[in-house]
Amino acid sequence: MVNKPLDLVSTVISPLLFLLLAAGGVCAAEGDQVEPPAEEGARIEAPAAEGSAGELTAEPDPQLMVELNPVPAEYDRHVESLEQKGGSLGYSFLSRDGNAGRALEYGFLESSRSGGLFYRHMEKESNLELDGFYLNENDYHGDLLLDYRGDYRLHLRTESLYHNLDREILFSPEFRTGRADPPPPTAADPDPDPLALYRPVQDPMAEYGVSVVQDRADFRYRLHNYPLHVNLGYWRYQKEGTMQQRFADVAFEGPQNWIRAEARSVDQQIQQGRFGLDAHLGPVDLLYDLKYRHFEDKLPTPVFSPYEARNDLGGNPEQLGGGQQHNDNPDSRFVSHTLKLHTSLDGGLVAGGSYSIEQRENLSQLSDTTGIRHAKSYLRSAAGDLVYTPSREYSLFLKYRRQELDHGYRNTLLSTNFADPVQVVKPPIDTTKDILIASVAYKPRPDLSLVGEFRAEFLKRNNVSELPAPTSWALPENSFTRAGSLALYYRPIKGLRSSAHYSYAATDNPSYGASSEQRREGKLLGTYSRSNSWGVTAHAVLRHEKNDEVEHFLIFPLDPLTYTPYPPTSRDRRTENSNIGIWFVPIPKLTVGGNYAYLRTKGDGGSGGSLYHGLRRQ
Image (cartoon, rainbow, N blue to C red; front, side):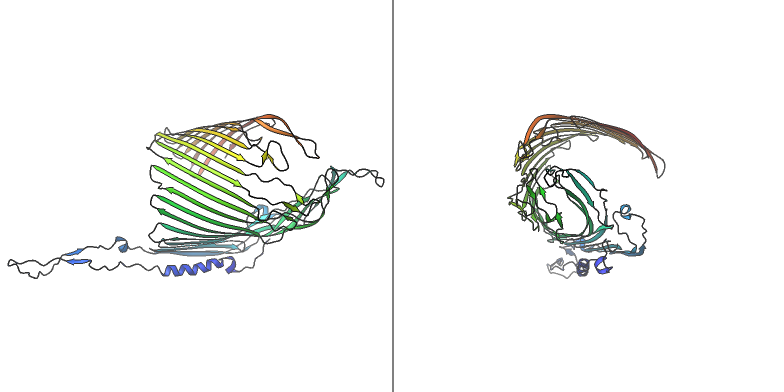
């Protein structure tokens, strides 16, 4: 468990909050009321009256005063300030019996002092809100929101919780079973032991848990009356404590196999910075967003010694024994750029588009394995939307999505844990996916709506082959999916709602055996309620999935490893799901209800089937 010193400054309100509380006070102090500007020539006197003899005579009061620049109404509006404040003090008592972490998964298992406070001050041009609560050194939160004239907006938040983790018990007792490489008889040992030992090593009794702290700061600046916003953000996530680490030194070869459980310290941190701009540029709105995230494991990678030396099926040395690193949490870095553009959202024709690129980089610190540090993956995404509403009855939608996953160049993987340090691994799969969606909505009457949709998905892969291989994956290079759906929504009378939905999908070259080559689904739903006194709900779902191209491979021989294609088999699966429920309110604040459900699954081709029906009352 994590025990922190009970320091009010570091646990109740973070230092970040203290700094910005001071800044908030300065901003609020500057929020004096703005007086209307005194403008020259605001009042003009009317000319004097002309006498009968043509001479000008002075006209006494009253004089006509003409006001050319009236004072804006917002300067005369009087807004009263609002101030609220309060707090609480207390003590939290907690008693424990047995494994209390199972009963309270998220919570610190100790009694402690507690307290909270809140303060709100709202004026015409500035708002300040402060809220916080402290339960113990591992469970608290604080929130500060400051707004000045809408031009400056600052939001700070800190929060912490405690997560109790389980301590798993390994199998017992140890046992012996066969091994893939039994030693041959020799003159010294004519009858060698053909069995291998499997032995658990249990960690001592302990309580495991981690404290999770999140700090967040968001700042938004508006360029006064210009339609431009600048957004800045910072987020920190920190996890500290201890956990149970379970790992194994197990193989089908060798005389001994170990399964171990040990205590492992946790000290991890994620930091993220964000910069964004959004602006209204005449007919279009533009948005740009930049994110940078860094993950760091502050503790070294665990090392266990000694691992058992292992041979291959031919008895040749393959894996070396001794000390080895295991269960690494590699450091990583993430950078993303996003650009969005869309037209006005209140017209009959709305268009929008976006493009983003993300980069993930592995920053592993392993010392016995090289070739993975600075490995990068790139994800590029593009999207386009077009919405056309010619009348109140019709709406047309067209969407396009494209995603490219590129794992970049991979260095040769070298490991000192093997007799041959050069390790051949399968490269990751690079994919390109294109999705096109077209839909139409028709609403002839207020109580009736029809929605139709067509979806096409194109998927392309590389580093694949027809047969599994050490350097490729047994997956189709191209897949094409066509899907269509039709939905009806009908509300004939008050309190009654009904809907019907039918969808169909067909796929060329399904990716996996569990994927569907053809899929049909129908849904019916009806609900009725009367004056919040009683109601009925019923729904039914019928689904049929089929795949006639389930591939299988025979592995023979094992050394060298060889795959032989087996004739494809078929898979057929049908699902029926229905439910009906009724509820009523006999007296205020009391609801009585009952449900009946029927579930049936039937499968051919090795998927099996099941049947379930049940009645529930509440």
